[in-house]
Image 1 (cartoon, rainbow, N blue to C red):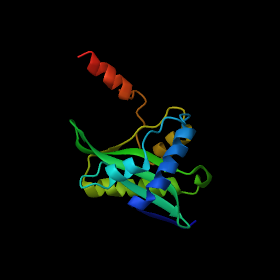
Image 2: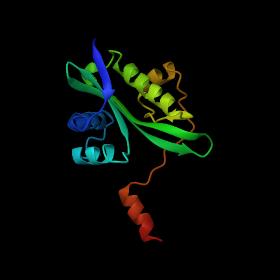
Image 3: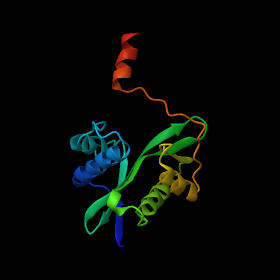
Image 4: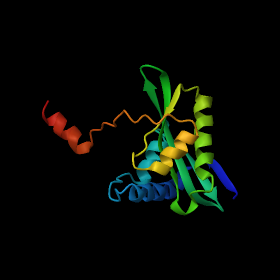
Length: 159
């Protein structure tokens, strides 16, 4: 198949949000997405963008994305975080995930990062196998820790 991988543009954000929603359904959290197209445009295309996004096109339709942003490790230094690598359900198995991950790794290398990191759900065995095949270390002894918006407010209220 003939795919095009390119840097996302403002006009792509509706398609990007559609893929984010598709991922939420796949991850069994269909109502969890709060971000809007305007949020994606504002955060991704300001003078100091919060993220960088690659899109994958097939016949001018966006069928995959890789969204990344910079972090800092106190042990290693600059780190590129892969927030999401999404390939539309009907396009999986065509090599598109590899092309997107290739672009992320090349981008991280250009930035000179010490590490590229991301999370994967423990039940997503096909994604785990894919990442391990690419040489990634899936660290099963770490847990993701978060405070959501309500937990932040509850925390603040106790200060």
